[in-house]
Image 1 (spheres, helix red, strand yellow):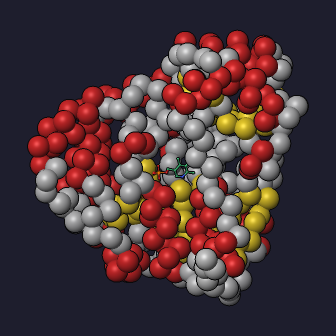
Image 2: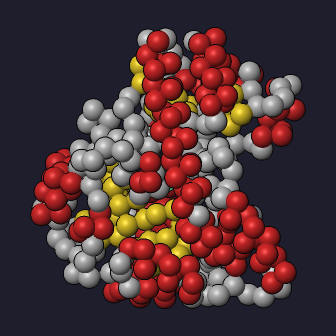
Image 3: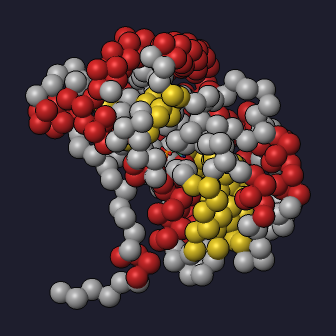
Length: 361
Ligand SMILES: *Cc1c(COP(=O)(O)O)cnc(C)c1O
């Protein structure tokens, strides 16, 4: 059959999901493989979240609370904002999708760093909008160059702090200058998926700039530090005017009932969060030292992962590590054909990663 579809949809390269772990193990004849490819929490989910979810199973016959009342109340109290400033999503990915759907139309211009999170590009293209890529400078988002590209046609700007896949941060001063050069009505999205791991005191605290009079949207997720990637829950912090627009297109039950209770319990499980962040910091320090010992080029990171220059084709390094049961991410699809990204795991996983990469290179 001949389908009619806009060119901007048929030209999208789909997000590549990769095979399930069990399938890879069978194919490569390995066992006890470890996945260090998606920046997940190696400790598992918060035990309090798991218990809250188990307790909520008996109500699965009911629709979720479409307003996300309790979770939104807790989030807004912690941040000192109004509940109406918070919009829940099926992962922060969905908030990104609502923003692009609500504000972009064919021909709109969107500025984004490159390389950065692959979903920005996919979502901007889905709306038929035009992506303007600003290359990283020394692996950091070039805030001066980003501001230089803002024009009257700019509808939205994506910033990632810390950036994925480089782990670099945006400083308060750079952000302040950028905002000064950007109209208040241009949607500035700051994706903070890894903000809980930041140790550098010069890092931007975006909430300081939050206001009803500026189209600033801050995205957070329960997928990384909170250990709930499989549950699909994240949120956006935004002026009420923007939230009201998103509610017009939001599917009413986008945040499912288990996700709502799990996220609320995880938010309250401060011990688990502290333990998770500490584990990541110890792992980062260990791996930085071990990579130095092997004279492997890696870059300072404020997230829970490293970008490593292998100085050889990364797809080959990925494949050789996979045969040893260690799954990392080749950065060739991000435009870094000789780099891999690896997230910090449990200590024994970090040790196994180091042994395996030494052999793979
Ligand atoms: C992991 C990640 C997210 C999180 O997406 P969810 O949909 O909340 O799981 C968002 N942005 C970046 C840059 C990420 O790396």
